[in-house]
Length: 492
Image 1 (tube, rainbow, N blue to C red):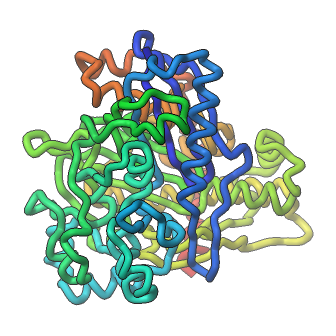
Image 2 (cartoon, rainbow, N blue to C red):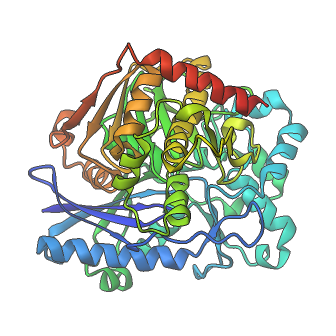
């Protein structure tokens, strides 16, 4: 008996098959094997073709089923994790009308800002906890104004995970947590944000019906089952955005618990029981996966867009893909803490919420042609990513979310000893790395949604710490000094 988890990212679609009896992953796969492209038809734009998500999902599912030697009937439930804040629009027959506008696309910033001004800061922030900024609702407003022929045919708007679920089940539904990440949830009224829908002129019929994060969200159609090699009628019992799901995968469900991840983007995500917000929306508050009216749980999310994508860009540009990430890490460690004065601003992947939706761009500052070489550039890049995260962590502290112990999966940038050590020493926190990832978390969520687990301890019995990193108090000052120099560059 297995649970299947799908993690729809911006670089790949991952699948994981979790043994329901042992709570251990028996097979994992991701496609494409090279990173999935983002299209940028204009500066500040970022798009992907939703059909590519489906094609890669089918390949990943078939790969894990084959690797595990599993029969179609052995999969008892499916869970979905997905890249947040995107927009997919389709007609009534679920035909995609334009490429998906994904999370790091900056075009909708003015549409969110205008809504904030027109509706009033106090009203918007008290009800939505966030500015509409650059999120899903504002992206749909951009389509409405700039592509009226497309908008006229829109029958459904969806988050990326909603679209993947619709391909699986034929049903267009969403979750309250999903609407909150699109800035379409009214936290005071505990319902979809009708006043924002009305402001943008969206028809009420466009709002998808709600399903619980954990629970039946639809069943696999015969068509989807045939493409995936699964059984018709298999239930989809969980869906969540990638960062709430990453927290779930690390057993982070209660106030004070903190998750981190550093894939294409870098995120620190803390759980609170208080509906707090940053007045500048530099960090954002959403409904966490286990939120209920009786036991409220909110996820406070800090996101830096340009993390792993910067490391990938350096690898492909400087080294033409000839060096592995492990070799790059070794080279970076030849430079001293602070990279001998070389500073890197990693903000090269669209408008940054932590910078109040400013599109800062990525850059190196202080380059000395007589002193600096590739080790300094590589170290400055990794340190710059951590410095950017720390800059946002200071904002999180202002809304009551502090760091003591941070949990992360042993994956992506946390595979770099330099990155992990810099993060630990600069923040002064213990970092626990676990044997999990987003796809495994989605599989575990599927089991929870099916009601297979009796309690939380049972659900996470297969989760274990792989490595623990403690801050070196003797090294902290050097990292703080390097951060201070970096901050000076940013504030210029």
